[in-house]
Length: 433
Image 1 (spheres, rainbow, N blue to C red):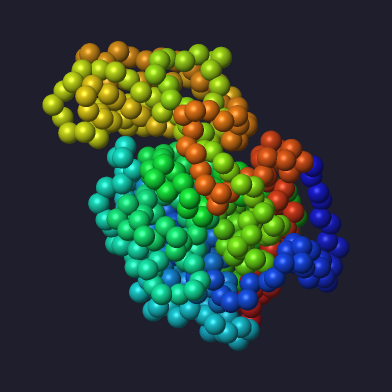
Image 2: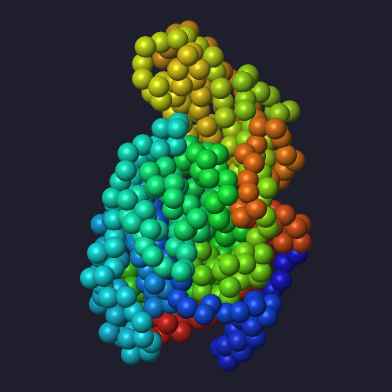
């Protein structure tokens, strides 16, 4: 079910903002103190919307106690230098921001908490060696504070998995909001490690709802395709930089994680909020495939597909890449697990029937050719191979009335988008003075 918001004037937008903010929390308490957050991002990689969300964060950073900015590009060329470049833009705009609000993070402080995480994917086991980023997650989580550390993940989970592996005691000190979906395919191994070994983690797995924030980006109005010209153009150094990402068209796919922390009570993920409303997830689907499949074989969208192949016992280190899965025009490395067992994991946010092949330079391993049908049902019916989760794991609501353009839970985010963008527009105006 779709809901259309019509705003005749800026006054009506502001009025609706006040009323809807009260309604969104359904009478629950508003955030009484600034939340502790740490952002893990693949900024500078394959998707420029992380730069957009970083600009949004910097313009609202007075709402948070920010403890870390981690560059975690499991795929692509992202690095901490891109975060530092964005901080430099913020530094030039900060005097104007300070005229309107207090509590802004100083640029040198933000630089001091910017750390480099893992570059490249982790092996089958889901972890590798500690990084500056994973060690920083551990350090922040172990600080004595009555507030939990909210880890907002905008990319892969590799540094989070590494931190949990190296310091399992932090599991009850952190809460995770993950923008999953396409990010899941880049971190299937680290995701599998986390769900198997930390099923009781407090975790929001947002695979689809966040897309409610980008679903109307082609609509030619002031809050969508016209937003740059209506609000951003002329807005300081951050505004001048914004045009470099998607031609200034606002995607902001990672921003719902920030919005969730800004609106209402983040301790209750089932409430309505700017960043979505979620349902408990009791199992995370995993499908083990030990033979070539056909189009008649169906898996849930976002599920972990684990292809297992038998082959020769060879003398190479366990977790050595030696098979290749080609699916959806992309290639994924598979591993030798030892004792003649080989495996490769995959996850996708596409639906429909996908052809695939599995090949290897090891002659004794036969070529697999098959098809698999991905159904738009998450998490779907439980299976004995699924990962069983505790009672603090949440995901996109399955209510059909909350689907938009076949995207599960999208309406829990899209319904607040115009209000959010109007509020951000006020801050862009600060930078035009």
